[in-house]
Image (cartoon, rainbow, N blue to C red; front, top):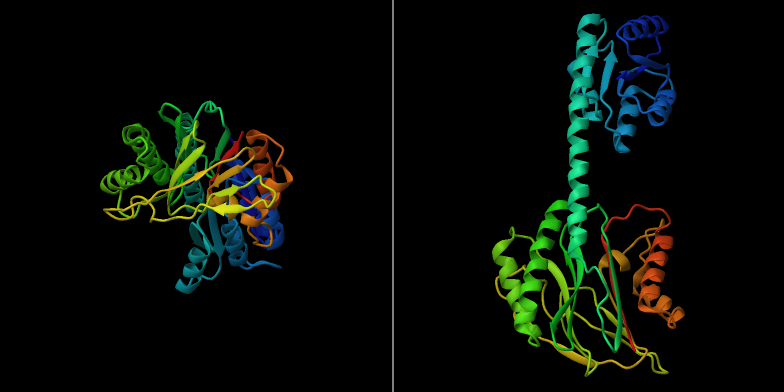
Length: 373
């Protein structure tokens, strides 16, 4: 493999001589004589290593280094300077340089430093690629924990989706057959992101799946049990907001406990279009050793909409840092009231994506949509 090195030097003699020696070592060499050109080449050409002079026209080496590190570029940077005092070295290293060489330098030593940094870079790339494969495998496993098919209900059309921000995440939803004509509806959001949140999510998923059928209609007791198990098994400081609803497919009733979760919305199909917020009545699960939950019940009529969501939906930001908000959720439900649960789910996802306008997804996005038949 031929490594590409960007050599940035405003002294033409050094630029030509060092460039020739690097090419003699079988490196591909790009050159620049000023900081602005160096910055552009680093972004466009993605070199494997940069030899960066400090004193440059337009942008100094320090400025170039700070800018690319601020943008997340991890390319190894060796700073070259005629000023060898400690303050200059500290400034360069604080700016993000990986090494610092003072002119005049010994060519053999500089080339050895280049080889060493490229070797470490190669090893880092191997580890990074393995981590990416592991994350993809973990994401595939996590997806298997989500429902593979829609639940069959006579009086409710249900749909759900979970879109992690980092490939794996701490959100999940579930539909659980609790008993004859009884369906458990779950949406949870574990505090934090990435692998730690995903592991806590897996523990929570197992507890809910195991305990929900045992507790049947006793929703409050179920949440207390989930809290006790989670608090006793996960790392301190780990907790989850959780909405658990038990839907009776014959009585058309929803009994629920909201443990610190963003308030789901029940939008009535009646003429006044009343909106009920299913607010939290207890703290998130896992936060405290004990939890005394209370449950609420309500009836659903044909055409009513139930919208359960994680804060990755309502708090998604646009380019002006404005949240998607509950107001937009309600407006979208009103505009798509004749659609199916799947259609409403897709419309909400698309609306959040349009609102974000290309901004990176910073939080998991999870939805459960129900439409009473």
